[in-house]
Length: 339
Image (tube, rainbow, N blue to C red; front, top):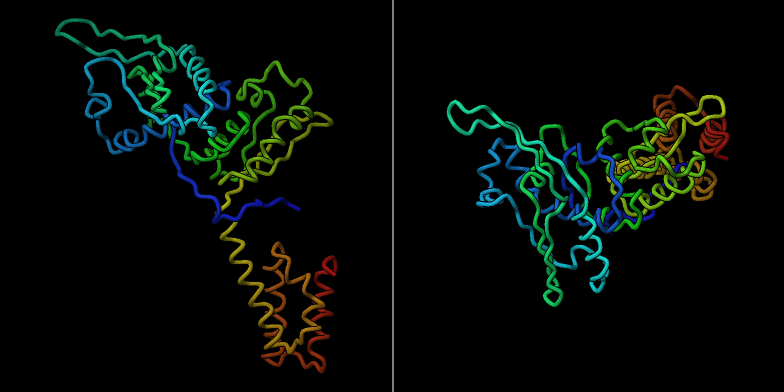
């Protein structure tokens, strides 16, 4: 039977943010902390992203009105790590982000009359600088405007995901898979060739055996997202002969599931009400089929069957002396595996 989230949906509150599709599907190899920091940076840029969606030009955004080529973003140290005392971990992660080389080609802009258009190539780090005030517990991150612009581009589509999931996850592969399934959740199933998956999560040289890849990367991500994710997945593999050729992520949405469960619970209560009031069931007879009406996976069909039996009696299509016995026999015949 398919697994369901252990957490009550009321206990988990999610703040949904967006990032460009190109960022979602980019090949990256960040650590968990690096990805959390990058997610916090993107979360800070949501207002600018909304402005671009509304057609406002980049030059009109306050963040980009500075006279230099950089933008500054401020954070509390506690925003970047679970353990507020883990100063050394944040420092190391910021150093490594600064050392990630970025090359951005800016479109040609005509500067003066009769002067040919020229393009700019920006060579920079993912971040340019980070200033940590240890006692104030603050971090100021500076990045090139061109880098910030890449993080808010809306022209190629956006991925909507919960910021908290990136923060709660302790596994960088979970973070990556979560981004992917969030982008494709409208498809219900996201299928990807094994070799393409390896490239996407930057493990071409690791886990040569696909079964080990599934065991050590996909299954732990599946388990973690089942616990913390607003979006999670059920995993299957496609085989050609004995060879696994593709991975299939059957995408589930926690709140959609909760809504469906609520509908199914209402159907169960209605079915029990029909049994007791319309079909004259006593407590002992209700207990006899309790397993059947308690199964939310089949309650739609069970409710339909119980309703049809009641309609037959109500319309006098059937004359029955012992109604509960007749109903139980009909249900056992229709759903033998439930008894």
